[in-house]
Length: 211
Ligand SMILES: CC(C)(COP(=O)(O)OP(=O)(O)OC[C@H]1O[C@@H](n2cnc3c(N)ncnc32)[C@H](O)[C@@H]1OP(=O)(O)O)[C@@H](O)C(=O)NCCC(=O)NCCS
View (cartoon, helix red, strand yellow):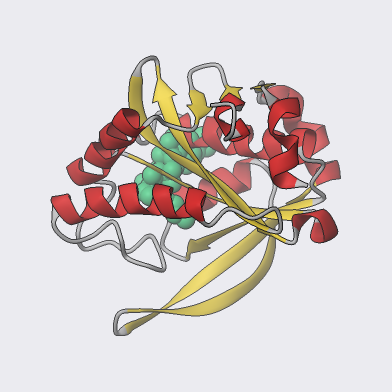
């Protein structure tokens, strides 16, 4: 799209492509959420959008994408990329920041449909987000927050050598859960990045959206 340059942005990893979805692809992504991201008795997100009836989970995905685009500002943005394995949508990778031109700090989030988990895709998705942040946008630091019990998300951060950056107490419904923030800095990423090949296409066209 001429007037939404972020549609030009495409990240590729050995097995995956990450880019903004069209509305029909977004509908596919919503179906992945409807089919299930985690068991109903687990909590993975501060806003428990991935629990509840499948149709509601699907609708939340659609609304979240439309909201993130509608709310986009250069000093407060949330990039929600669909993740494709071939033509199939399998999950979502987020990169977001407030006042990025000043702080040069961004944060990531991600999820995969349950049937696509534990196959190394989460690691490739995080590598794509880190490449975009550090190489594409010149970030200094990237953070990730995961609940104490989220072994998979924290394992991905550990693979990239993130450092602990504090624990927050988060209320989820009637429960209080420890959320562990972890951080990686540009120098640390540079040491590792060759092991996680990612290509960025379309960056010049969309730089104006970020700075
Ligand atoms: C978090 C998530 C995106 C990780 O993606 P993934 O594709 O499953 O992760 P990977 O296959 O790349 O695995 C990365 C590491 O985590 C480990 N891991 C993955 N799932 C695990 C599990 N359930 N228990 C223990 N270890 C696990 C893997 O063994 C791997 O480590 P290794 O390479 O040293 O063996 C995915 O599990 C998911 O969507 N979970 C539900 C939503 C969620 O929790 N999102 C994050 C919120 S903070």
